[in-house]
Image (tube, rainbow, N blue to C red):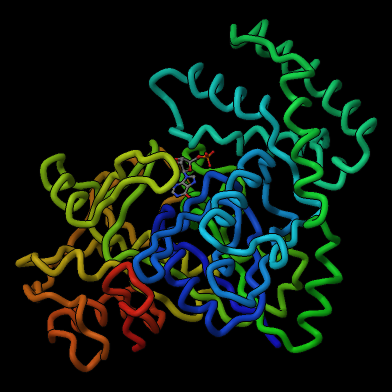
Length: 424
Ligand code: IMP
């Protein structure tokens, strides 16, 4: 059975948690393939709200299996905490969660390095989530990383930590003027985490191969978004992984040709957390209004999200690099009150009109949006369940996005709950 992929088509926080939750009903196994506890996928089930950081969203459906793939960076402290939070809410996690032995481990020195690097950048901060994501991936690609599988051999794990800590402490001491870390600070808590996690650890490559062969339906869950991809995003104001379609195969071991359906998730407007260009960013007061209506605060850090109008130049970049086969538009209801809804169709850069997202972040930072104004619908949409019942101008808005993106919209979300969805 072919696999389905869900990717963020903007700067993260597009509402992927909700869309993944809806698509999980049609899946057997949900797989996370990149990022780590920087992610925060919010899912509302009945009266309960869940925010998932490392655990795949399929955990909220009884009977579905969940895999943390090799491309994810795993902070054992956060994972154990998340497992306990779910268990306290009556969800049986351990029998439905597998953790790849190839996934790299985030250790306390990665978090301290993340904070120290950010502090050193001064006014040029990236605005990371301080979860140690960049430093963990740096160690992975620098070939000094520690994998989940390494935790099984205490002597080997201890030696790898010793070697890495020697290097990190030299940086803390000499360059960042940050406190050094002792071996005990790093190792102490891990002695308790391993017994908690070892039952979940698996070579997930043959597991997923066999599930595919057996005709099981696999859903790949992207975190962050295309414009936070380390190659395709607004570098250096990006995360350190590949949230895009290419990353889903590398981060799970599922062959690219098995992934035939690629669902891009876009918010009906645009938000981003942290620094970096956001061409459609609104003036402070208008931004605040949209933030209040849309409750635009980070699920992981609680930070206020920056808000702007829908940017078709951004989303076309996502259509191209992910090969989106369909799009889910979320939070349409947040625009219900507007007289007119602007949509960015191109950029103006030093007198030229650009329709391709520029590769240089410095150019993006200078771009001015070119807007097309669309009429608002000025009526509530949250209670609507059928495409035919949407107000004509709301349909017109979605159809305009569709033609600007060049991809069919298959889902419109009009509220946080599972049932607040329109299949187009
Ligand atoms: P990091 O992933 O913590 O290194 O942060 C790098 C950039 O990605 C920052 O601008 C973060 O705000 C952003 N970021 C990381 N994870 C998410 C996410 O799940 N949603 C939205 N933005 C994110």
